[in-house]
Image (cartoon, rainbow, N blue to C red; front, side, top):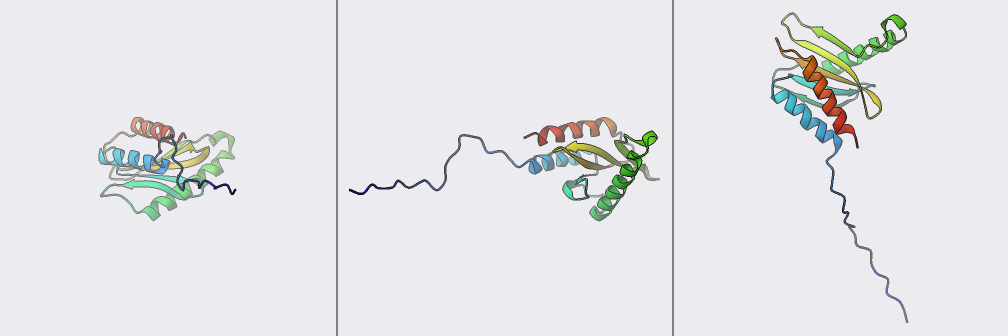
Length: 143
């Protein structure tokens, strides 16, 4: 007598809850910070200049410009790391004549150096809010 082979179900259900991709969580965070007016734009770049996630408000600057400047700032930081008196830079801030600030924060996320670039509106303080954003991103990236 031949034994029947039981078929394996095509889709095996798991008891684990489905988790949204980390990139979507981070994108939602960036959107919240821009829509509340804390920043005009936020970009997160890998250390090789790859744009990982962004959220840009209505009046901001070009993505290509943000990428180019972020990569150049990272190159400057890497050069300065070889000079003991200037090593340990974690942030660079550029201020335009109109008062807007472009801030580049070097952060470790996913065990890699990343560049968190934000455009700060005129007459807005940024340090505390940027610290909170960095903390929120780090929490989202823990898997």
